[in-house]
Image (cartoon, rainbow, N blue to C red; front, top):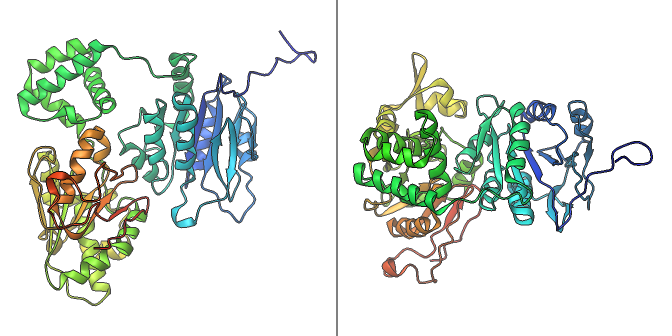
Length: 495
């Protein structure tokens, strides 16, 4: 059927009864080329696309015109109150934030520059508004905007895609999203539209993720129990979505087509149990990862730590340290801030722990490929690293202050009398119940006026009263502990 002018009638727009699948695409530095690649692969499929790119507030944007030349769909700037239509691309205007509310795209005043995260804001509003029909896409960009929103979309039943970091001109945003453990596809930008169309169709008219049968859950539990029996690692602590994805990767590698077959393989081969555990250990880390987070740490926490350094050593714990870049970054940050202020170099003990022995071996060596140091400021690179062949080695005086050891945060006793616990992008892999168990453990490990440094998708909102967790009520540190996170939230310590 066609309309009177011969054209096809418009596809039904968004409605509360039958909302469209909405694809939100976040990009920042280097994102234009990625956006063009993405849109060049989009075909009409009854889906609406919303582009949020970090734009200068001081210039008129010609992004709709630029993207329009790469897209087969109409591209337009979003106006306040726009109702999304299928097979259209909407672009955020400069100097605005964007949310979805009651079926409409609503423009918001921009947040202050220091905390502005327009991609997270849109992703999170879509998760709340349409749940399983939300699709989050993270393309090239600096910083970590989008990571929190990816987590929200995944929790709401939607699905998520991230540009392959090696393809991204700037890989910080893709890597931050990957660190959440909530990414379904890591692919080049041009391949994303076909995956989205296929996934939307597969999920059907209700747009929800496929129902998982009790048998699947039983087999997942049996695989986790088999691993724990064979090598003592607690896979049941991980989120089911994370566990499923990692098991699927092992099944694909082994050409095993069902969970029952993979369970049989694990039960009869301890090497496969070890391979699955290795698959679970993401190890996404780099020096000074997310510079904004380190700037916040330097501003909010380091002065306090240096002030107390004259009376006691500074003790830091980095659980889940992987290959050690985060631990060395913290040691360098503290030494450099003391040097900058003309203070004596503090007595520093950084305890960096992980269950991955091969990663710890790399960390103890302290030598990394040149690409690993690309985010290290030049003056710090010259001061705290030395070039050895084609690699950079952390100088001995910094290495001597960092102690790497095997430790399972889920089962081994915590360190104690700590001034700072840096646990970024580890909690997000675990069930909420496990997170609720670990936050009090970190609190117990802290000295009075100690700090907990978390990732952008993590919160320390354990459900306890002001007096603290029952097991630790007599501990002298305030509850909850002061937190400085990548989202720049801080709890003032009045004790």
